[in-house]
Length: 154
Length: 154
DNA sequence: TGCCCTATCTTGACTTCATCAAAATAGGGA
DNA sequence: TCCCTATTTTGATGAAGTCAAGATAGGGCA
Ligand SMILES: [Mn+2]
Ligand SMILES: [Mn+2]
Ligand SMILES: [Zn+2]
Ligand SMILES: [Zn+2]
Image (tube, rainbow over all chains, first blue to last red):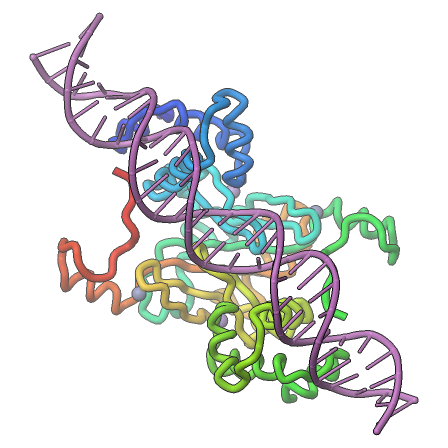
């Protein structure tokens, strides 16, 4: 089913803004509202930021988009919904990879003790260091150049 | 080991601000910077917001505190570190519960395919509806009162 | 096809959460 | 106790996102 059909199904109007956002996220998943706005403006120069936010919010609420928020950055969006996959974020360069669920079908939707909560979503964000960042860190061995995590106390 | 000792171990000065933040989070986990500031001001009325942010950032970076960011709200903090437990957030009232890891010891630190990333942290945020929110929703059955998820499109 | 209603979009102000920079303060080693 | 500098305070600034009101344009229907 294409985007137009799906929007109709949901009782939504098929606007250029909505289609442009959906098309953009189809080819560029894990995009922030800013990134979506820039990308969408290639084919539709006049879209406002507010419209991007509106579209992202509405389509996310209706399950046509998925959103997740990596620590320390803006919310990201993708069209891949309904498979409850996870995300790995590089702590050094910010790269993001999809990670299939480790435990089988609807994994991670069954925590050990939910304290009576009726769990509907499991957002899993792994943080680590990607291969290329490990290499460049190794290359500069103890030096102060190259990709660095942000400085800390003391 | 108490907070003073631990701060010394880390080579940090033992300040009233740091101790107050640690003491407050000991009894009130899952607190935002704002909540921490309010709580800390009971015993130390002069602390600045900036100091609260400084302390939270520094102690988090050094592993003395843990931080996680539930979707749509400010970052929360706790003293319970090193056990990689998870969190369940009620989508209606915002209540937060600790959830032990489902899969054993250092669970969730082993996703199926990490795309070469060296995983160090697994942040798992479950979203659902807590027992008391289910009840009050049931009580008002289709009505427009009571705790409601925020309104959506159309 | 053209009209009309209202969902959607645009504009512009505003909120919240958080960081930056520089001067004042206060740990803690000598 | 004195001094150095880590830490705190103060005040400005930035990023991400929401709110509200008027303008625009989908799309059902004559
Ligand atoms: Mn993804
Ligand atoms: Mn916790
Ligand atoms: Zn990387
Ligand atoms: Zn609840």
